[in-house]
Amino acid sequence: MRHTTPLWRRCAPIWAALCVCSCLTAWTTGSVLASCTPPTGRGTSDPNQYWTSGSGSETGVSSDITQYDPYVSNVDQTGTNMSVLLVNGNSWVQAGWIKWSFYNHGTLIRQSYSEFEPGYNYWMQPARPVGELTAYEILYTAGSPNSYAAYVHGTLGPTWHGNWVPNQYQVLAETHSARDQAPGGYNNHAYFYYSEYRTGSTWHEATQAMGTTIAWFGHSHPTSHENDIWDTSCAS
Image 1 (cartoon, helix red, strand yellow):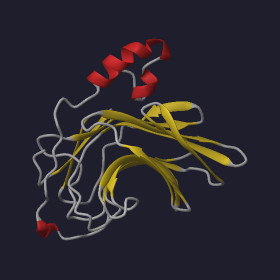
Image 2: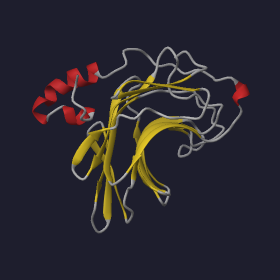
Image 3: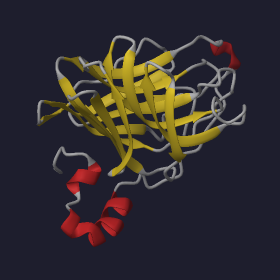
Image 4: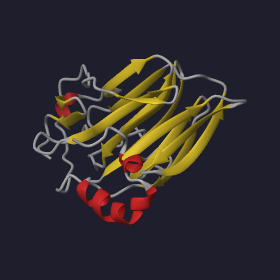
């Protein structure tokens, strides 16, 4: 059993050369994740989510997340994502992958991204390879102002600043139309591995199972450190 620390922090700097080989090889799904078009009878309800969360004085959240390329109808340009978040009401900071057209003149694109609210602040970079397990992490630091740093696979992305204090973490997958494919298929799941949240300076494993109220969102919780998700209409 590996440590519960997120993927990039499990590779110590002294082993950087080994990480290029072992981490990027070991932490892939081993198969190409293909998308499929869901049946039209599901309608266009918005939004639809899987989630696991906890409330308290969270100062960090992280998860190793499957890079997936789902079918997105573009009915809603905010698309589909798998992410981690720190939240307080209508304020949040989010990091993960997204497939959307909102910031690409109506053309769909898959990206790694971070969002900071309030204010509709976005940061994007090219997506990681499909099939890879990518570590996404957010760290909160109190200050004047407070800071919220987002990491992608161990690399610092944006550091946001604001005056709100997180009181909840979320590990989340989300679509914005029932015409869009939920990440994963029943023969080829998408994963959240080793999700963690931080209180103070101490990390804790997030062992809760995913929840959802959407009939076509399949999910399982085979171990305390794994949540699998998939679209029940799609094989892969």
